[in-house]
Image (cartoon, rainbow over all chains, first blue to last red; front, side):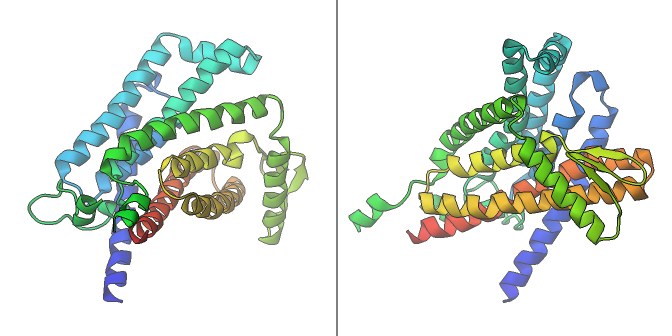
Length: 150
Length: 176
């Protein structure tokens, strides 16, 4: 019973820290020039990066690497897609019913929405409790005993 | 013992890149199907259903609204339910995540049977929140709540459901 209470407290702490990180990352994105990314899709990346940064059972080094990867890839691809003019052409084509441009627009949306989850799948592994449980002393990057068994 | 090992579903660290790749492919297919139907007007019934439920619940909590198809008119503005408002893309994301894991179909089926209705219910709560925000907040604050706060909240709900299901699936796999 005590363990269950402790797990609930850990999850509550994780949720609060995740929300705090999402505010911090939203502020970071707010400071970026608005022409380099799509705000609506950036929110998915921000949410994923917040979860990654709040993961107590993972070392800071691993958290920073994964958060940097998801934010970096999103910003790079988004910047390229916007600055090349493909973003405007694709979404104008989507609204006008142009099949070729519609496919480009859908491909962009698949990328923007799926990327954060792809990174999260790799980050979380097979044990989501790494997100909220406290890091073990002396090596949070080590897989848990159950992971080794797996 | 050997027989038990052979029947044990494969769900370890080495399969994660495959899970990630499979998730991407499944989501791309689902997204393509959703867009095809959206462009053909095939999601109209879903938008109308969301609008009808939201309007009914708004009346229940004492906010008078007028429903006209997918338009909900409050005392201050007109809200229109579009395909994004139905959370169908979030359901596709969640479904692709569940389907990508190499574990028993029953476990995946339970994940879908619990998660998709949960996302639908939370989305209705979000739409109700949008209606409340539209009549109580300033236009700027309403836009912040609608465009930012609720979107992040919905993503976190999907992450939460996925985390719950992964724990559930892990228990099932380790008992298999």
